[in-house]
Length: 130
Image (cartoon, rainbow, N blue to C red; front, side):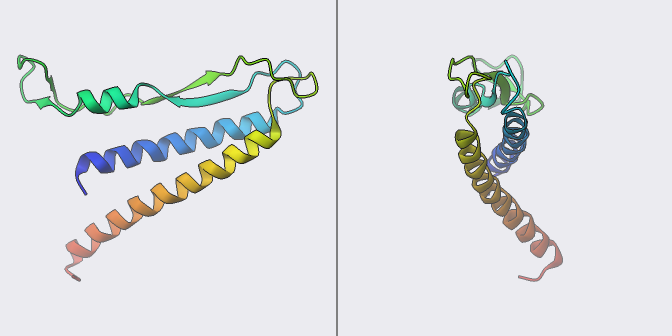
């Protein structure tokens, strides 16, 4: 697997971890009056991926950026300002949160398996067991 794919998988794993924290916070505040549910969204991940296809070695190169800046997070926590009320207390729907939690768990298991397989294959190559 190319290094860029591994970086994207790692970013997605970090996204799933953050999403799990936010969902857990929403579930914990189901009955809290005036609580606004939160969500985690990618910040222009597609456009960033498209623009990062061209990488240059010099900052003076036209239309390319030098290096690979992976330090910035590609997702952010946002407030859901919808008016859906949970019995008048807030906008958290426990059924929706539980469904999102199950979906996020499956995604995290997938990305964890892919990353684990990749690093196991590298370990096997280093050990020379192939």
